[in-house]
Length: 405
Image 1: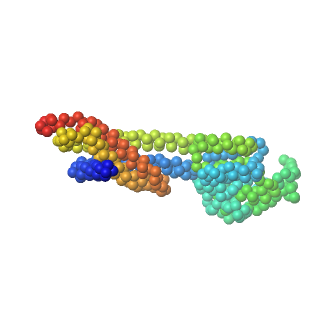
Image 2: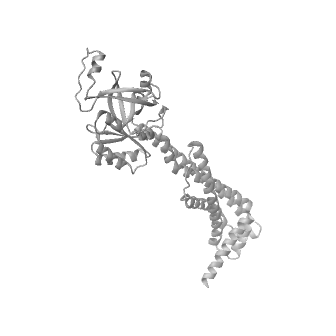
Image 3: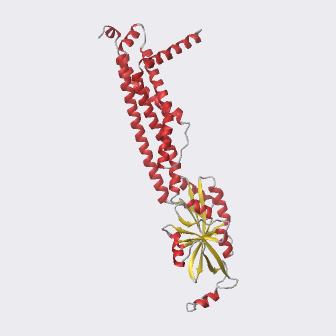
């Protein structure tokens, strides 16, 4: 019996709230629009905030590697490199490129061969302008040359050229400074020397030191110098902030003492600075939106209470307690916040999607956790906006109101 009575009271309570909405729909629509606009902007900004690290991470990765590894002593061995790849695979890795540098000769002039993982270098360096195509790890005779070298040697796409030098670990026959070019050339022959023909597949323009290198696959370089993998440095592009990279650097040092990893500060600190400023901006805008929404709801509820003074006075004269008057208005504000928050989440995602497409050129993912968060915040804001009007409502003297004063 008690359960039925409670159920009927709840139904009556909901009916009263809904009927109040319908009777004063013009004013409620104004308040609802304020809540929807506030929830839309708040939801959109929060969605963008959660997705900005991923979007900015991708944008900053276009500026090159943000984590560099160097050997503590000598060079990084193939075994150490394989262990490093195992440690880094759990990170959000964009690319990993090992580099081995060896001096070679072209027409008796020294140049530098840079052996690397061509796929990893491509992922790390999207800012490189490549005339032609990227060389691959499969066709190892095809290489990429820097713009300075191509200009000096007069190389174009598809041209072939020869490199020569000392095989690793072999004793070179020293050339006397007074030797002629022909005599030096004759010395650079035999089992201790290599003479390899390479093909230009791409010409690199970066505005940096890369323009003075000849890039080829690491396996091909090892084959040319007849040596096992010995790495001078490892460049990584990882989607992580500065503190995360510092933590990874410490973990790396504990597990691989000969590999010293460090974040590239000019990239990571710039990313962190931008993120911190955007976070502060989003927080400030959300605070302003919450305050304005609260004021709007409070103003609307004050106007509604002014219209309902006689109704409130009559209820109190018939025995209604202040608690019941308060619950009526709180119920209306909660319903207002629920509807406004729910609609605002949908519009907020559309707003965030438009911003992401126009700024980053990428879509974002919908954060389902935002639905309860925004709805609850909207209900709290409308409830807060209702507190002052409710205080005025409970202060109404039924005797004065019913007299017409």
